[in-house]
Length: 244
Ligand code: PEP
Image 1: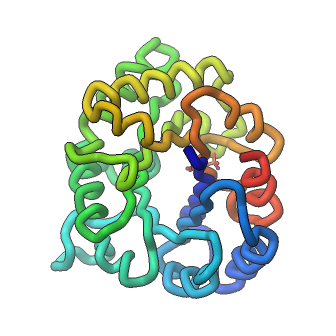
Image 2: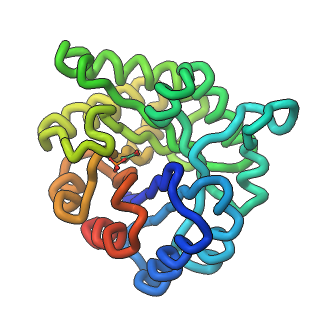
C-alpha cells in the first residue's frame, strides 16, 4: 500500500511558517508516498490554499463530535472540511492526557470526522509505566477497541501507534518492539474488520527523524509515520518523506 507521512505541528506555526510548506511543495512535485500536514486550526485555511494542487493534504489536530453548537473553543469536522482539510487527528496522547479525553469521546470524534467526509487518524499508545509493567499490548488493544468505531475502513481510517514516552523525547522503541505492537494492531483490526484491515494504514509516531526513518519504515506493518517536531521544517520532513 502507499505509505503516509503525516506531520503534526501541534501548537506551533504562524503565517510565516507557511514558507516551509511552500518549500515542501516545490521540493516534492511527485512524492513516492502520501503527505499530510496538520497545522494549528488558525493556519488550516491558509495552508490548504498554499498546498492546493500539490501532493500535500491538510488536516486538523482535533475536532468536536458535534457539527455545531455551544462548544466554546472547539471546531467541528465540518468546519475543518470547509477550511480545506481532508484529515483530522483524534485521540493524540496530548489530548488524552491534557484534556482527559476518553476512548468513547475519541470514538465519537472519529465518527464525526467520517460524517464530514474526513479521514480519521486515530492515535493509541502506552505510557512508560505501562510498558515497564508489560501492559503495552493490553493498553493499546483497549484503546483500539474503545476508540476505533464500527465501520472503520481502509479509506476512512488511519491508526497511529505512538508510545507516549517516545513523543518529543528522542527515545524510540526497538524495531522489534515497534513490529510487535504493529503486528498486534493489525491482528486486532483484522478480528474486527476482516480483510479491510489489511489496507488500513498503521503509522508509527514518536521521535521519528530523517536519521531513523528508513529503518522504522522497513518494519513489517509500518505504513508510514506521524511526525511532530521533525515535521516543522521542510528540510527535516522532506528527509523523512524521502525515506518512505
Ligand atoms: C507526535 O506528537 O505525534 C509526535 C510523534 O511527536 P515527535 O515526532 O516530536 O516525537
